[in-house]
Image (cartoon, rainbow, N blue to C red; front, side):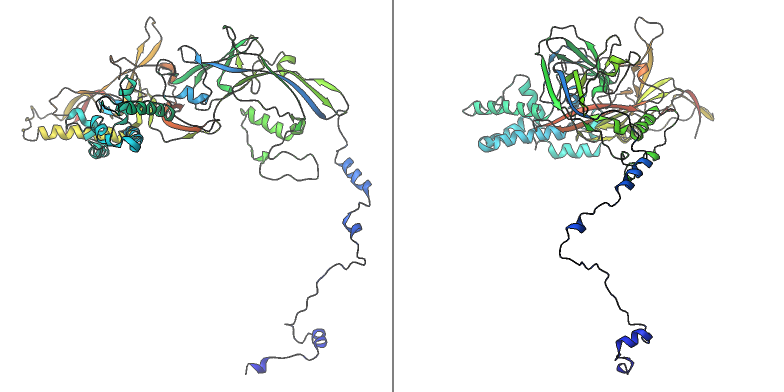
Length: 606
């Protein structure tokens, strides 16, 4: 039955002409058939009407131009001086170290290993202990148990003074896991740094010299692994201003230049962070001059308008999508440069090593007409523009400084999660400033939420007070009053108050002094304890032998507030070595806040 439906045409030409079977289609490929075996003339793509192209260029205005030549060569004479000295805050000058980035040198902070009686950074302590045991493994592994016994972790007895352990479940589990089983590498390091020997208390036999030699290698390893400042020389952090301050000096035979970073806090260190002033010291360096002949090249960037009128640009960068406000002058200048003057700028590649203060003493440009031009800085020819220009260092305003700074900073820095974070806010109702510890360092070594840690600590003390008073009978009410008097309301324990006080020898200037809130628990028979900060940012002066007060300049806390963070940072320097340091940053906060702190309050009795 199916075979009867199949029709086989006998005359295919007649079937196609009469279209009796419309399902039959026919294709014929359209192709050129050369009449010769040579393709030279066809591949030349000859232009038959060159006049049409010339008139098209005339129509599009490409013949309208200035009678000027194009630069073909340039010769630059550059004077450069190296950074030779460094000063952290108001400490003494010291030779500049070229083996680490400048931001690591300036930002480095001490790793917090203790907080009052609490051990911190236990992860680093364990890492240091494991490294020392690894050094012993080849030939001195028999002393492993002796070092674990001598420099051991101990779990303190439970009491209200050890709330930092027993109120935190994770910290308590960590202490139970390592107590008597692991070595405290930081305690061993302190013994060595205080003049002790690695063999002290371990052995006085034949292996004593070998252990002492390994102890020196251990100290060197720690210094190379963690960049730690000398508190007397390398601490550039100013606690009362919540920012860094440091200075570098570039020296050569003609003069000495001081490069001062007075307000560095954002973690991005470059030329705009420095002020340039003439130095008063005697130069110690040598004059370093360099002259090169270079070929100028057009400046090119993504989205740049093409110089040919009938060529379309790609759409990766669209200046039409930029919507500047009435005050965004910088955006308007950028758009004007990109759309109008982009092809008028040339680039001269001049390679210099980093860590140099460079001054262009001479620049000549030759064009294709054989003319030679002497190029000067804009400040030299325009007396009205002496305040600011791109890449120019800020100076005292009295001298014209056209120097350029190639700061010895890292290109890419990896930043870890914040170990500490404090939010400073203004509380206008309470007339004070609060330092809210949103992130505090835990014993394990990483940051935890400050609010949760404070709540767990308070609940731990409340549970102890409740257990102590569980068998007592509450006193009967004296009367049937419907309200009760409350001297002061509670504030979360991770809110640290800063009280406005007058500056010494001043009747009007105000500064902010760190205070303490009391931990008041109903039914507690002990004296209320003062709640102290848990972050090193707010513990300035507390951990010294004689505790000192901590002040913050009142103008450093604006109405928007500020956020200060501390985190580990890592980069790789020019020699390939890895640099790890603990640095601080300051950013804008989220505005004002309220702690609901009230005094002399009447509350309804529940």
